[in-house]
Image (tube, rainbow, N blue to C red; front, side, top):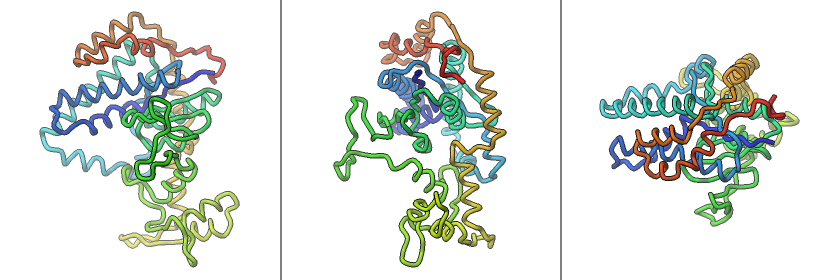
Length: 336
């Protein structure tokens, strides 16, 4: 059995940028983002005892063609940036490209990108294609919790938390406590989280609710999400009572809950991509997966650290080189 680290690369890099202290100048924020990204992979590698690192990159999402509003809010946000913010944004994207080029050309990690899919899709398909292996997703994106299972964990490098089906743990293997209750922090049922998001929508990605204003728990006269969720297997009264409801939006357009729910399942469920897209992603991964054997990876990484003044990482370059130089085993019996 092989343990893979699956890195949601853009999420980790740009999320680190946003948690950096606002008083930092652009160069310092850049170094902070680079440090957090590489350190998160390094920590997850050691905690998981991983064998190979896969960096998943972003392509133009197929979801934008399937559903026009998808992430349209982000374009509006970019257009509202000041000139200084735009310059910093470009600096970060240039550096991100430099990092991924280094990983692709000078390390032995796998770097995968599909022109019509997001990193989330690549990671989900990788797990599907390597069902008998162990996987740790490196990302702070809560969308990945839906994939957490007996052989899939998620490492949040911003909070330094390992999210597992058995609970949430810190870097020392201790259970994370809920700050309000003092009790061990648990993750909700992944199936429930997915159902709730498909019903409520996702404001971050501009995915509209299938049933605006729906209650989590029902009342005497109205079914809630919990009751519908519990009835999803048998598709009985509670399920149909909710899914066959109709509502009218502010444009006067009528919606049936079931139709919008099914739309959101396609958008949100990382295992529900159209079959032709799954095949395309799988073929793309197969074409890009090679057993790289780049020499002197550690020395090249030191040079990269020097370029971005990553002094603390450079001091432990040997530890980072351990996973940077570990190639993919195409002969692995678990690869399909």
